[in-house]
Image 1 (cartoon, rainbow, N blue to C red):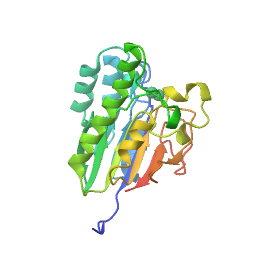
Image 2: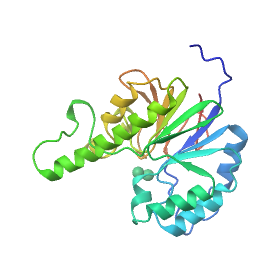
Image 3: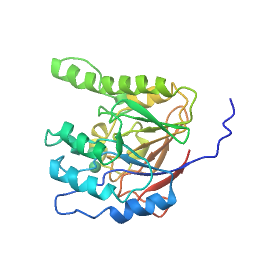
Image 4: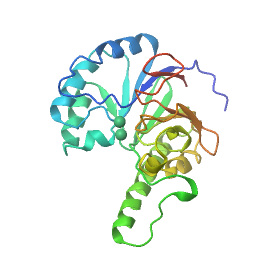
Length: 240
Ligand SMILES: [Fe+2]
Ligand SMILES: [Fe+2]
C-alpha cells in the first residue's frame, strides 16, 4: 500500500549521560529540537550511572521538550540497579520508554528495545560451551525476540526502530576493533530485516560512524551525541 501521508521529522540523539552536576545542560537542546522536529527520540544512556538523582535532573530538562518524546534505556541507565525508579521518573516527565513495546505518533510506529551485545555477522558469539556463555547469548536472543514481538504490533505502519546497541558493524566503525562484540549484535538486524522498517537509530558506539544499512537495506543511524551528524546539530534530523 502506498504511503501517502506527510512525512514527519524525528530528532534523534543518544548517550546524553546526564551527571549529577549537570542539571540544566540539555534544556536548550530539547527546546531547539522541539522547534525543528515532530518527535524527539532518545537512544539510551540518558543518565551516566543510572542514579535516581540523574534521572530527576534529566526529567527536569525534558520539561523544555514540547513535542512527544520516545526512548529506550542504555547500559548506563542500568548501572546503579535502580531501573524501575529511573523509568518511573522519566515516564512521569512524559517520556515514552520502550522496553519491547511500541507507540504511535503522527501515524508512525516507534518500536524500542535496548538490545544487547554479542558481535556481528559470522563472528557473532554462539550459545556453545559453558552455561555462562549460553546465558549471555540467551540475553542477546531474548532482546531480539522482544523486538520481534513489538514489531508485530505496528504491522503495515511506517516504523522507526529505536535501539541502544548497534544492529550492524558498519555504524560502530571507528571504535577499536577489539570492542566491536561489546557494541551490539547482528541478531537485532536479522529481526529488523524480517519486517518493513523505514529506519533504525541507535547509540552506545560514541566513536562509531553515523550511517550504515542492514543486510536487507534498512538505513541505520548511530545518533550517539558525540557523532557528527548531517544536521549540524547534536541530534540527527530524520524524515520518516
Ligand atoms: Fe553511552
Ligand atoms: Fe551505552
